[in-house]
Image (tube, helix red, strand yellow):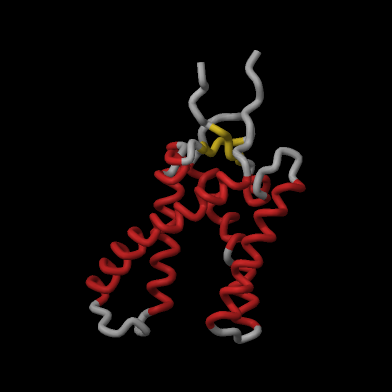
Length: 164
């Protein structure tokens, strides 16, 4: 009889989240260079909505592909694996669903900032506040999972090596 998988601590999950954000700078750099080269964009403000849509698709490909394999590089570093509720690896459709629900990390503060026409520092404060609230809300999940995982039917599990 095996024990149910344990959920990584909130601190480890958030450290993984921050590390993932740093790694995405490389993805954005390469994708932005590719987009700018292919579209012959000379000014950063030209085609910005097309670039945002392109990055949305690139991020989707990145996360869906790696989550369906079980882990991103940041998740490997922090010994975290994503599985479905039955403990199986994610299908690509389940990984896509998780990707879409994971936008709950950023869409509410973006919509609020846009709706209130906020700029710079105010938007950053709202973003950081929302991320903190969204992370803390996981404490109210029965297994302390993030709510986008609950909505997507996925779970993050601890994969640290067992000590002998």
